Length: 355
Ligand code: 5AD
Image (cartoon, rainbow, N blue to C red; front, side, top):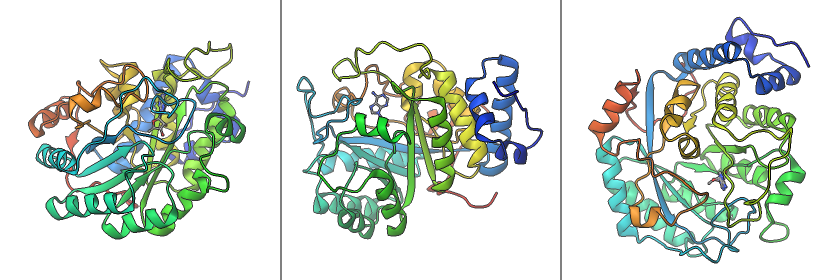
């Protein structure tokens, strides 16, 4: 294997070649990994500071027309009791987020045909007229015209992970909905042209995922100049086709350390991007996961404001925590962050381009 290179400065990290990045993904020596964590944390502080921006998450519908092999909301999962929240319920969540000091709201849902152009436009307008929150949509693959209408209604950001840059693996995991539909990468381009801040990302530890493809994922984050990078471990869901797969020797582990390596390298390669410490990392390691993410490159939290009765049913993967270790009040968040040497961000927390 290539010899491990420990760059002396930020520039050096940005100039690592593919083999050297792969070497870091495979690194197991705790003393060397400590160098990686420290470099990512330094870069995070220098470029995006100590503020942690909180995005309030609301999971507004668990209906989905898609059949992604990894996801518990897939249409094939007949055992899942589905729900849709009313606009009033969503607005009540928005108000709680505002009071808790969140600068933005993330409306996330399955690809639910009832979340159509008008319904979402109306909801976005209502949120924008009643709060100062930036609005992020995470509603799957949609028509360019729809994305345009929602942007006109005031939506600021859109999250659409490309899940893996390994084309064959992606195609296997992700049956297309309609022939000729735009690929996720093409949609990311549409989102950019439509004027959204664009977020994307991948799962770590998918069956058949290679280290090399994770290096390509990292390169793609930079090429796409992503404003937000969402990274989480793959957590098998028993009611999906990937639920019972037994990991093979040599597979990339979808564990907290591997996920953190990606956080750290993503921060080093894309120093200005907003990088959440995700729920999936908090699910793998409820005691410490989110905190580890924040110490290893992340600068964003997404506390979940979905009412508990719905939240339990939004089961993308098992054990999905309700973020119970993350408080949902301003005082609670300020204390939680203060104890970790960080502070609650103010304002919408848009992507910065300068330090
Ligand atoms: N484990 C971890 N993350 C998952 N997602 C979907 N299914 C799983 C799973 N089993 C992630 C995908 C999707 C995001 C909303 O949730 O990356 O884009």
